[in-house]
Amino acid sequence: MTALDTVNRFMQAASARDYDTALGLLADDIEYQNMPLPAVTGRQAVRETLDMLLASAESSEWVVHRQVADGNLVLNERTDRFLVGGRWLELPVAGIFELRDGLIVLWRDYFDLDTIMKQMAPPS
Image 1: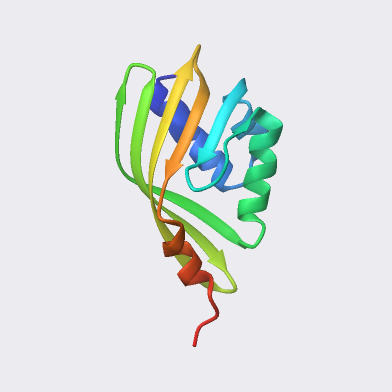
Image 2 (image 1 turned 90 degrees about the vertical axis):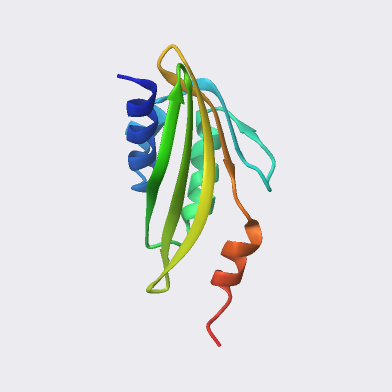
């Protein structure tokens, strides 16, 4: 499996909350950070963070628009979508993934926190 294949499989599984599949694609010492938030280390910490971030969403999907791989480094531009209260919230994201021995060891997502916070406010 290529680095792109691994990252795409991980994103599909994680967004669907298929943690058995998703966590199996992460190294034990994975470092994950949503850049406005502190980094976490380890598979269990990633699972707990995803559970927290996805808790209010009835469903989610991460739509990749562009991606490139250079060896064990994968960069993607995507829109993360969350169904909350019957409406879709959309967040533009740039993601960086680094792999070692076929597993993801680093995952960082860059986004504007205010973009999603404004959408979470009750409709006026």
